[in-house]
Image (cartoon, rainbow, N blue to C red; front, side):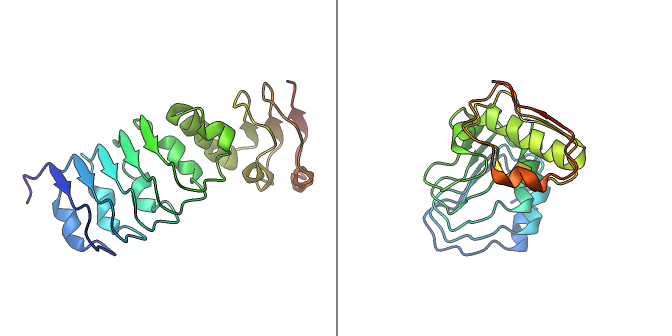
Length: 187
């Protein structure tokens, strides 16, 4: 199976993947839709040539870590799962051009960010991930309606830029940012 470049395992009863996925080293397109996957096998992270991954219509609740290692990924379909949060590290999937998430109840990033498309969503997630590692978080120009909850847990923040958004409120949880010295929120 080492010469295989496309694999479709749609409409089965798969609840998990096995170590055999490690042998799919030349797979560029992998579709495992309409199954019962909750998570992925760690070996999936080693499919460095993978460009398209379709996991629609499964039982995934949390974006598997393995997906975050697939830096060459261009298309990712996770629609019709049970995902509520996208990990900030997804912002570093620089080649990702199409992310399908519809029919999930995604709370983070906020809806107003998600509606702007994959590039904006990826930029938002990258800003959060970078902000978690630094003292500065720049969430300017994302059309945010409120201070995102995920920003309120970054207690090491010293500077927060929320400028050029459509803020209707600053959550009381902003009080958790006890090290915050500079807040920019001009419309």
